[in-house]
View 1: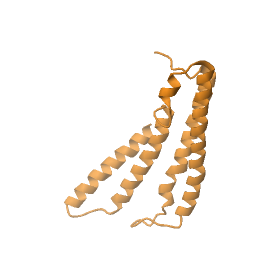
View 2: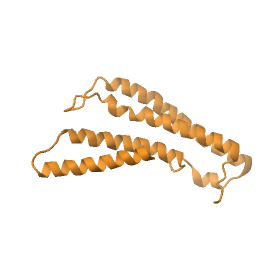
View 3: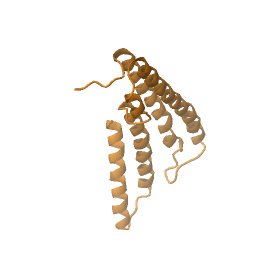
View 4: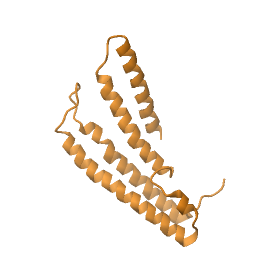
Length: 147
């Protein structure tokens, strides 16, 4: 969650700095690359954080209407599907990263792989958080406890 906040804050600061330097007539071209990097990492890390909080990739309304074994089976199925998506993100994201070494970003000449790395990172975090939810749900049940 903190990483997502850092990325979105970095994105905001970079956009403001880009606007200010352009208005001053002395634009910093590298700011656009940094802004794009913060934005992409913020989105993908945010996806993982939302998954951990059950705010993303989750069919909450249908699951909340169930209880007992039926809910356990449905919640498990939901998370197995999310796990499949996470593994797909890791595998195909890794292939994208490898392919990204053939293209460079301008003006820094860094490989596009530096951007594509956010995809398998997100997949790994989503997989980790989904396994955590499965373990906790199997141990304690998936029903939400009132505070």
